[in-house]
Length: 187
Image 1 (cartoon, rainbow, N blue to C red):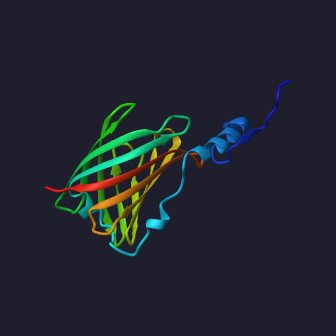
Image 2: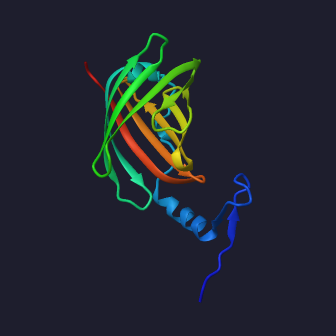
């Protein structure tokens, strides 16, 4: 016996793009395997997160990456941030994974208005936008393959440690997440 499931059409993608209902159903069920959302319990009015100050100099991140249908994987990120004359932070990061490829990426982030940031990321498929509210920095950007990334970084009391929660989605379904603790490394 063959089970027939209808096709869903994406109005935004036009009449030629159809997704089998079985894929939509599987993504909905499996999406629960990838934690989504941000760490709202860490939100506080202070210390105010200034990414230019926090990422200037050396940082180290240790985290866990969870990709849908794969085992959790440890991630280590070594960062070096430099502030340019116009106030842009240029953050170079070496990302090391226990499985998979290691890579080098570069962020450029600058303040555009009080609490607002814009920039680029070598991994992104478009601009990076950011907003600060108290100790939280929220970053959002598109990635290749129709993926969307959102990061919520929370500056902890003392200003030397931040918690990073990143969620990557496709068609609005969470397909990957990263939980990371980032520490400023003394000079």
